[in-house]
Length: 157
Image 1 (cartoon, helix red, strand yellow):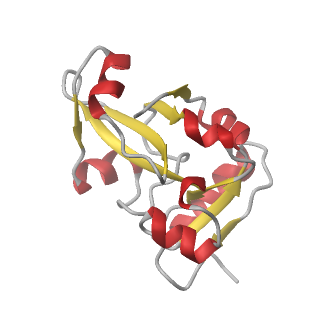
Image 2 (tube, rainbow, N blue to C red):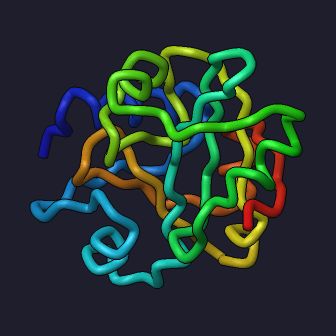
């Protein structure tokens, strides 16, 4: 079955990075961590949700990849940047990533950005990340996430 254009874009990035992970599209929406976990049949903690923030000083995008169980403490992440963060709106997210909220993958963005990875994701054998649409995901190992994104592993809570 053919992937949608956005999911195909993510699949191509995975391949270009030298990995064999496969993007899968579901008939049901996997926009939230709970919806994704229900569709996949995994725990909510195994969902790697990609959240875009805006650095208030530079106006640049910041990607935080968080475990589905965790809420990002913006003040904690801001300390790593020595700045302040604000949640990005839908237009900002699409402008810098090329993807809509609810389907933002951890890779394949239009713009390079600083990336922080929730240390809690490293406690799982496998995790799942969005793949370009609200119903597309791909499975990967935590070390693959850190390699693919070159993100910094930190506490986000």
